[in-house]
Amino acid sequence: MVNYEPGQDRNVAALSNLVMCDGFCKMKNIKERYMRLALKEAKKAELLDEVPIGCVIVKDNKVISRGFNKRELKKDVTSHAEIEAIRRASKKLGDWQLIDCDLYVTIEPCLMCTGAIIQSRIKNVYYGSEDSKGGALVSSLNINEAKNLNHHINIEGGILKDECSNIVKQYFAKKRKNKTLG
Ligand SMILES: [Zn+2]
Image (cartoon, rainbow, N blue to C red):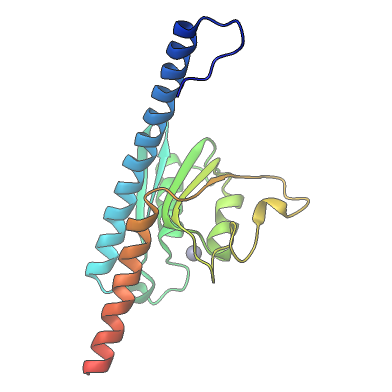
């Protein structure tokens, strides 16, 4: 459907709608492309029998770091995908401040990771599926409503939502099945 202002040439309106749609589709494709890379990280976690959550950090249209959940492997509660990726990005940039960086993560970040994201000054956070229990961006807390924070993040969820949520669901279903069989 073409939206046009009263008196506006229909062809001009159609063209401007097309340009807007083109821009929107390109942005959507870019976000999905990065989320697929985060999903690839999640699959690495799955192979190691870790809860499959993956993350990538992007700056100037380049992936500068990747990370996946390694909590069991490292026996370290802070080894969530986001923290792993933030550590690597800081190392790469030689700075704890990740200005103008975007973080893509398959599942909504928890309270710990949200804290690290805010502290590191990451600009935009894109997540796949919400985490109704542990998610601290929009689910159990709404971090952007917190007062007096000196940095706020832009948040967008639902990117490749089903794929991001299914990989976790399947992981836990398999775990339950193995437990029953065992
Ligand atoms: Zn976390």
